[in-house]
Length: 355
Image 1 (cartoon, rainbow, N blue to C red):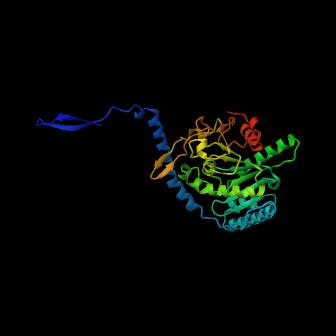
Image 2 (tube, helix red, strand yellow):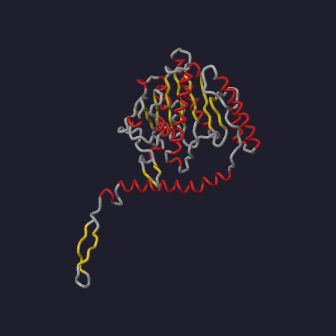
Image 3 (cartoon, helix red, strand yellow):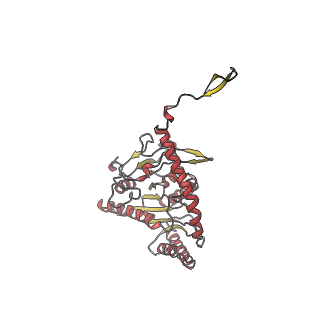
């Protein structure tokens, strides 16, 4: 800013501030200002919605009673059946308690999980609920995929998350049959953290991911205790789940990490993840996540946003084709994305179609 003299009524010169020439990058019509305004509008809308919707929803939906999780030692191949039985019994009790509380939706969800054909490594019916389910024969698997979900995944909505895991397991089984070998794959649906709501302030920050990362690290350590160090483990992370995987990636004992429909991981590049795993990324052509700004912004001491776009060349991931699908279509049977995810899990990386 420049100070220049200006004569007053008495003829004396006073100093007045003269603004510097406008910065073209900050002009109202510049891309930078338009982007910042767009980000502010998005954040403001989310904050207002959360301030109104979340308290009302909480008041209308009292906490559902449920038993404490079954007390189990870390699983081994010898104790898997015991863990499955204990968690089914816990889900059955949670269903009875939810029904007694008058919540038929939660009671039905818990009851479905108590079916004899379901195999849970852990189950917690309290609050939003947590569940880690095994599809396939984990005890003999040498190829394991762990799915990490994004926002709004709870016990009530768990069915759609499980459907994606089931579609992947079916695709892996069909590949094994085509090659004439017995299935040696397993898919794990890991709802091991409290996911943020899509309409909430928590979905804009890394807070839930930072809480979830130690749990995911601990689970992978326990998984290695079941399948051994030679098994190929892939981590398939969707939406906000990619933020969780980004926070957990450092030193994680997995072979591949796939980031699909990602708003960002909190890291600016693959090297910043500090992992030896191969990093893959994909985004469907009709995925609305493309409109999420890839920035970090400090607001009132909280970092909002998740940084670099994992499918951008600068990030450095192996970008693969995901077809024309939307945000919820990555595990859709017959889709390009599901085929490529199966190839990653199976280690057929040369057959993965690149974007």
